[in-house]
Amino acid sequence: MDTSPLLGYSMADDLLRSRRLVRHTPPPLRGAARLLRRASGRRMRLREPSFRVRENAAEELEERQSYWAYSKPVIVLDLLWNLAFVCVGFTVMGLSMEEKPVVPLRIWVVGYILQCVVHVGCVVVEYRRRREVGFGEVGWGSGGSGSLGSGSDVEDYGSEQGMADDETSVTKHLESANTMFSFIWWVIGFYWVTDGGQTLLCDSSHLYWLCVTFLAFDMLFVVICVAVACLVGIAVCCCLPCIIAILYAVTDQEGATEEEIDRLPKFKFRRTGNFEKLNGEAQASEGLMTECNTHAPTEHVISQDDAECCICLSVYDNGAELRGLPCHHHFHCSCIDKWLYINATCPLCKFNILKPSNQIGTSVV
Image (cartoon, rainbow, N blue to C red; front, side, top):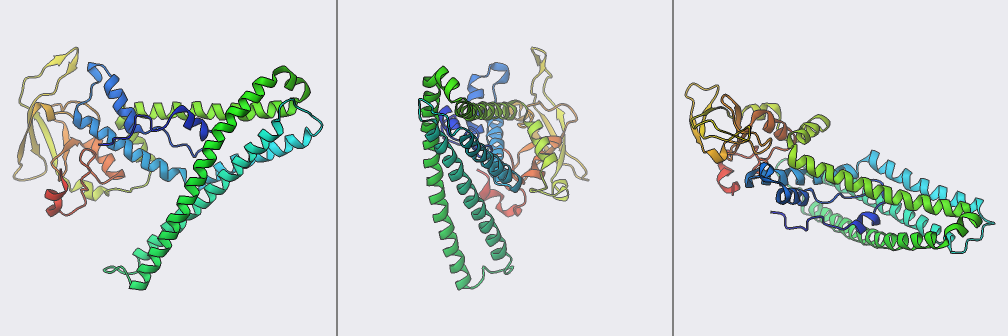
């Protein structure tokens, strides 16, 4: 269970990274899931298994966000965006050489440009490090099928990995310092612009509007990042099948293949308890899960508490097709098949379905 704080960082931290067009890390989605769980009414209250599935789905999204943030198109967009700020800043300062602002706006613009340059350097270093580490792992793993290579190869890889870790530590510390300075510098710029007021607008209009533009873009990205994070968090809690369907459509097969998924047993659900409705909604009812496509079908009793798909939160209807996993968890076929195509682990307990069957006992908690 994740014990991180609800939002992981404050609004100030959003502001710190606002200029970094795509470098933001949205508030942890698992924290948002816990907030919505506590704030929801009786009709939206999640059972513990359903809540755990959403936390694991949020973790999957966070990992993918970290990967996408350093993909080549995103890196190029980020660099172009920051370099555009640098070019605009120098251009406007060159056109406003005769302006004499009552507050040191030129110093603020120079500091702003330096932040962009430092950020660009950190992004390039991190991107190159990730590529080198990735290529190193592929080359190392492909050296032989049964061994890790010679001792010297392992030592060389270990030394290269240690150097990469040291470089990452320096880059992260530099980026953190730059981020903290960005927040302080934004506050100073906001104070100078508001303090100068109408005098700046009349005497130094170019510098004034340049600073206002930079400050406004920073705040705009804060609002966008927070809004997107909230929408994704709500979607994970209330419409998880939609998120899975989107990931299924836009990502390559990274989990189980269709053949591996089809080898998992499929079941038909049949109600044995009384069918009840509460406020117009069908309630879960105990039943039997009968295996399909077999000459000697086995039956499993499903309690009332388990007669619900933890992904879509829908109760099992008569005749519903279910997919059983080696860890003995079950879901609607239409829900779990797409998930397994993306990630070959159970969304409830994280058991890897591609592991040999003799490891089930040691992997399921």
